[in-house]
Image (cartoon, rainbow, N blue to C red; front, side, top):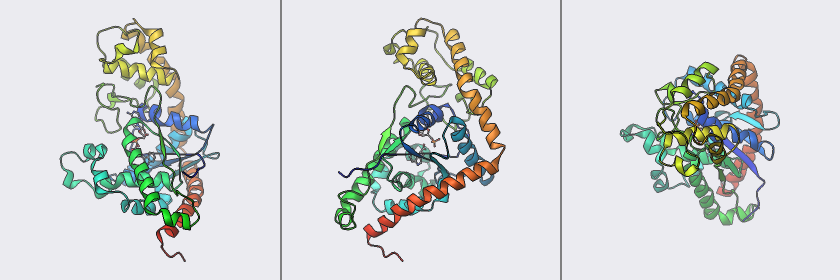
Length: 345
Ligand code: AMP
Ligand code: TRP
């Protein structure tokens, strides 16, 4: 297959309460990848409206995610930070992909089933078509690598299926228009490390999520030191001391989760954490986890507050990023129109 230049793309929804799961599952990786790759990071406002949003709240959430990206260390000059709605090619390519993807493929998406719940008839068409828009986000830049949390794995597989089917369905036209044997790369998910699925602090079998009604279930990036300490101390555990081997975490989801969080925050592995804390009581381990969490997250929260206090700066970052992203996306969309046989004026 054709060679594609390596490019990283990922997105985060502006739906409030960015938390430790978003940070460890996604944003930490975004930051690391800047060293080795060109990166495009998107605030996916079009995805946010697949469920109802309050417009005033949405505006501030878009700024908050942008501020989090910058506060966590993404460089908006060396790379690209922008909001999805400002590059219309995302929605345009999503329409093409709606015509490539099969109903049967979308019917298998577990996130739709979870989010639509029992009242599926009342879910928006956008919520159903959401993964085709996600494929368009990635492929409008012909991006090759996508850092995400474990919950996005199935959507990434669908993106690969869409890219593959487009390449197959239009293979002759792709060659004729000068793009060789494949127009889209098959984007690779990057899902690695000890915290690809951070669980709720109240229930080790449930994902940490922005929408959990209990604020004690998650650590928000904007939480101050006191809030972080309280939430870690109240986190659900079991009465046993920590095991010395990873195997011992298997039947203990809450212990597994806290050890994974500690490992990810300190840039090591669960095995290494257990070497240090095996046999320790949770009270000891939680104190260490509070110190580590506050040391890592405290400065991010403070920087986010500073940045959101200057919306004009945030908006200027998004405007600059949207312009640079748009220039790339337009080229891809022109080529797609040529491949499809549309007449361009
Ligand atoms: P979202 O908030 O749904 O837009 O998610 C943004 C990114 O954070 C995606 O890459 C998700 O996979 C990741 N993410 C969300 N929740 C978690 C979690 N509990 N654990 C690990 N990664 C997560
Ligand atoms: N669906 C992703 C989530 O909920 C967000 C997202 C939208 C995304 N477009 C993307 C992630 C493209 C990676 C690449 O977390």
